[in-house]
Image (cartoon, rainbow, N blue to C red; front, side):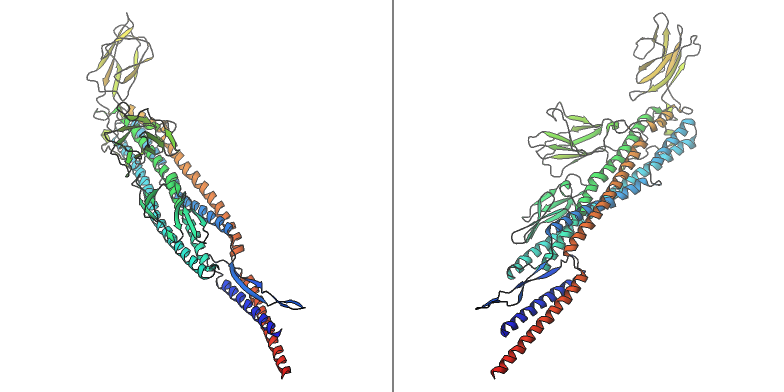
Length: 638
């Protein structure tokens, strides 16, 4: 029995030593990121039967070293971190736009107000060269700020492209390391008779955790303990000891943006849609670009296009100081149509503005379906826009929608071909002042109306406005009243029109009003204005554009549309900030729960160290006792 006592003590000594080594390992890794607390698993050794007495124990044995690990909590923490990083990235990006638009020194609102204030000054003193020069200066200041804001937003897009490249490189590094660890873990597990290599498992879980901060991931544990890691909507990133890779490439649909391609383990490359990559910093970056940045660029461009279009239209209806019809005041962008790089057909698509007042802030995608038909999608709300039956054909070669007209030139298409249509993206970038000479400002009305001297009745002609169909009169038009027939004659087309007091009359794009009681032979003159020196009637109409609702289905003015943009960005910034704060708090809570299971508690390890030390000393005492008994037995035999 002393012999059994000796081995029983030695087993306890070995168990205590194993526990001490494990505790020391925990203590050494108290600050190691991703480390899970380990525990030596101890079981009793099978006892020996002594006839007539019973079973006597043989001590204890250390059967395994396990880590404190909860797979559910780890997965939950990874998901929380992924959402948190996505929101943090979005907030960091959108805050830059919010700060820009909310900055009073960089705001477009006072500059647009300054433009129309200067227009009003020209209307008040149309012959004053200083007022006209001030108008040109105000217009230059406004267009410069439009372009500067557009350039800033384009710079954000460039930064997004660069960050995508960096994130993709990090993801590839993590994927390769996870695949390598999968291989090592499989080898070590086989060599270790199935015992888990805890430290390698911790390293792999840490890599998965870091990967989840970059992109949303899903992990499936295989039967051999290896991880399969999936990203997006199921694309395989890691499968056993094989790792696929991502690559930042120029988007086939939009050359200004970087897209992400998956290079599979077989070498096949496939461009991924931005929408399939969600979560993590990369997902947040893509979501910011598609939902906020593009919308801000389009909204700003739409304001610039509407402003230039309406201002130019009214400018062309007036005459300058030389009596010439006004020329365009601002430059204006044209809608961009981009053929996908992967198109197999050679069809050319062109777009033009039909009615800028109906423009939206969305981009559009025209797709050739498998059966050869076309589908048109508004990307902001994914809504399909109806196309004419048989479109495109000889009779339906164009289609109008949302203030645009699409037309097709010669060429062919193949199923899968697509086109991206960006109506307003370049609007702010391309806005500039075309007029450099103050005298070219068309402040005067294009026509003058007057009662002929010597009229005897009380008839009066007033108003005198023109529309876009007006062409300069080759000669003055004199309308004469005939009391016998109560009609007016003298119209350029030779017609005779019944006279109704106060009723508007029109011809050749000219609108005017005759009122009162003319007498037979009274006449009224309508002539092209050959001198706009002291006439500010068209400038008044230009100034009135400030409050006209000309944007978004003619529902908002220029300043209202800009205020809506500022409000939308500001509200979304606050929303993301609140969501990010809440998600950060949730992540902290989940991490605390996870660490309460897997983390190393220094106080607990110190207590365990003392306990196992005493255990070691006690078992050493058992061995010493066994040795003393054995010596005593030997002494008796002598």
